[in-house]
Structures are given as structure tokens and as C-alpha cells.
Image (cartoon, rainbow, N blue to C red; front, side, top):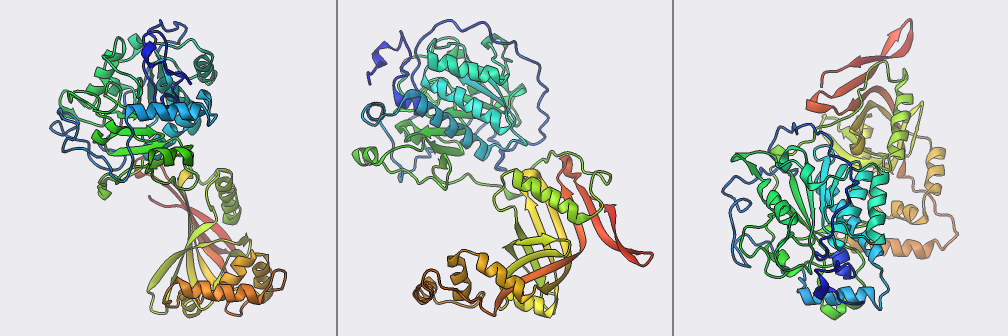
Amino acid sequence: MLSLRSKARDMPSHLLLLSTLLTPPLSSSRNPSRSTPRRRQFATSSFPSPLWLTGKQRSPPHSPYSSPYRGLYSQGEMGDDSVSYLLQKEAAEVDEILMGPLGFSVDQLMELAGLSVATSIAEVYKLSEYRRVLAICGPGNNGGDGLVAARHLHHFGYEPFICYPKRTPKTLYSGLVTQLQSLSIPFLPVEDLPQNLSDDFDIIIDAMFGFSFHGTPRPPFDDLIERLVSVKFIDNEPKRSPAVVSVDIPSGWHVEEGDINGEGIKPDMLISLTAPKLCAKKFIGPHHFLGGRFVPPSIVEKYGLRLPPYPGTSMCVRIGKPPFVDISALRENYVSPELSKDQVMADPMDQFHKWFDEAVSAGMREPNAMALTTADKEGKPSSRMVLLKGVDKQGFVWYTNYGSRKGHELSENPHASLLFYWNSLNRQVRVEGSVEKVSDEESERYFHSRPRGSQLGAIVSKQSSVLTGRHVLHQAYKELEEKYSEGSLIPKPDYWGGYRLTPARFEFWQGQPSRLHDRLQYSLREVDGRQIWHIERLAP
């Protein structure tokens, strides 16, 4: 791949892949398209608390977020020595390798970069409090990353707006614009932006310049950078200003020396792509993430990269320690449809099935997870998470070791409560009732429906008993594997089986703004000699 850095004034260095992923350079100063829609009117933010989502109060006017810090290694530096940092030359070399012998394309890597940016934002800035997103995009790959991120954020439920003043007239970029316009995402000319960006936006994505940019930003980007510097405080009144998110490098920073004069952007979040650049050592904000989950072993070995492992299937990973959290300030302002008595079903089991099906459809992980609370004969409670394995008109079924603590407590006090919590739907369901064992036949059927490993695990574990170490479990498991060769029947142990809770009370909880939650309780009442469910609204 050709290096176009020397032609920055003539065309975007969008062939630099790390400018695709690591945020690209500034380039062309072509006139933007004038077909963008006019800015629509926004309601002024009504968020009451000047807090980060983490609960930490925003920095007062005398913090590093409002006063200049000079020198590469300032006292506010957040560099993590366990992570590698790339020089500009190294970043360009990695770019050339990825785009050359390793076969990556610009659009492929730009898509991965934008998705990484969007998932990092969603990881920290929850939709319930940070909805309106302004993506300020430059003419190179860094701007392309911002355009892709905006598309993904739209699909995540955010409300993105685009400021793209110097458009790149190439197929890749015009295609991204078309995709965004097809989603009715507004493009805002610079002159239509409010002078005070704090009025209309909750998040501002800085996707102007990338790792190969050098020199002094030219109009209109110089003014846009100044606006990002000034969003933190208005009239010296601390308030919840927009979260500023920089893609790979804060625009205007030197890729190696950082914010040289201390007067540049101080982002709340920095999303490094592929690997952090050296200037990231000077980042002092609370949230540093790494994105671009595609670096092959050959590059890791060539440059001796030390990068944190990505968790699960995530496209982003936090670098360094999470910020200090003021637990007392952690809160969500729930927004949900109203739940009224005339909307719910007469039978709470039918209502539970409805909500459970909606939790499954929402793609929640283990929607059948429930907190089971039991108590001993003295009334001392204990709770743990178990998995619902059956539900019908007779009740809720789960399986466990009868010799466990919950098993002992249920033998002494056969009453329990269940709690389902479906976070993304702002819903809880509480169920209380009496408990009894299911039949041996029912336990037998379920036991043999489980994976063989789970069957062996149920025999190996004497649940709640004291172990000297994991090696005891592994040794016992290995012996059982040899005893029951593949295909042979594994007998269910007598100490393992199911319980069924027969409900006497339900509560369906729906989160609402200002803590005015909906709570509908079902309880059994005797009417004309028969038991019926009575529905009441409870105070939140």
C-alpha cells in the first residue's frame, strides 16, 4: 500500500489502514455537499445531575479537565505500562502490513473500527441518559470511522447527528453517507450547529483527525476543536456537559507528544484502535478503551505488542483501571411503557409467560436465571441464582442437589421466593409460595436430557460441602468419565432432583421515571369457596 502522507493537502490518506482503524489523517479541503438537511430543533437537556454515568462528579473548574497540563508525562498521565504504545512510524508500518500481505481492505477495517467505537460508547454511556450523539467527522479514515460508528449507534437506539464539513468524494465515503441518509440520520452544516454544543447533545464523537495528521488544523476544524475544548463548563457553572469521545487520537494532538501546549481537547473517553498510540499515555480521562479486534499474531510478534485480551465476543476492552465510582450516585432513570391493571392478564401465570417470551425475544442472556431465596427453621434467609427449568400452571421448577444448603433449608421450611430481573426491559417478577420435590420420574427424565458432562458434574459435586481444592473435582470427574464410557447410561444420584414452587403471590414490576415505578401484585383470595387471583397496585 502506498503511503500518501506527503500528499495530505491534495487527498486523504485514507489508504493508511491504521487511519482506517487507528484514525486517519486530515486531507482534502474540498467543499462539502450542500444537500444536507437543516438542523432540527432540540429540546434542552433536562438531566438533573452533573454526574458521569459512573457516578463520579464532573471535574470542577480547577481540575485537569479545565486547566492546561503541559509536558508529555504530566502528573495526570494515565499510561498503562502493561500495554504497548505505537510510534507514528510503527503505526504506519502496521497499516502497510495489514493492507498488503495480510489482505485487509479499507472498508473492511473501517467497519470493524466504527463498530468498536460504537460498542465502547454503549459500554459506558447508557441509552437511558445519553441519547443524542453528534459525530464530527473529518475527510479521512478517522471521519469514516465516525460515520460507521454513527450508523451502529442508530441501530443501538441512540439518536445520532452528523457534522461532515469536508466530504471525501470517493465511493467508500459517499456510500457511508448514503447509508446514513437512508436511515434519516440528519447531516448538520457547521453553521447550523449551536454555538454551545452542550445545549443539544449528550455525546460528541471527535472523529476529525487521525494518527498521520500534523500541522495546524484549518477551518472549520480549528473552530470545532475550540468548541470541544469549551463544552465542559458554561459560565463557570458545573453541569453535566456532553461526553467527548475521541477516536484513536484527540484531534489536534501530536501522535507521540500529545497535547503539547495543554490547551487541546480533554476527552472523557479515548478509543484507541489496533493498539494505543504514544500520545495515549497523556490521556487523563476516565475511560480508555481499545478496539479493532483483528490484530494477527504475526504483527503482535513483530512489534512485541502487549494488548489486553478481549472479553467474550466483545469488540472493545477497557485499558487501565476503571474510574473511581461513587456508589451512592449510581442510578438509572427508567423509561418504560406504563403498566396498568387493565393491560395485564387475569392469570399471573399467563402474564409471566408473556413477559418471559418478551425477555427471550429481546436476546437476553439466560432469561431463565432467577434468585432463589430460602430460609432455615429460625427464619435466617439465604439467596443464590439458579435456572428455571420448567413452568406451567402447577408452578416453577428447578433442579439441584438435595444435600445443598438450599436443600436443607427447604426440608426445614418449605417456603421460598423467586426473583427474575430482566435489566434491559426494566422489569422484575417476584414469586412467593410453597415448595415440594418433583416426582422421581420427572427428575429422572430431566437428568438424562442434560449433557453428559453436566450429568457427571452432578454426581461429582457434593454441593455446599468443603473442598480442599479444584483438583478433587477434576480427579473425581476423570474417574467417572472412565467408568461411564461414551454411550453408557449414567445413573441419576438419589441426592439430586427437582423442586417445584407453587405460587401464592406474584409481583410484576416495571421501572418508570423519577422512581414512580409500576408494581402490580397478584394474591390469592377465596371467593364463593374457590381461589381466585386478585390484582392490586402497590406504591413504588
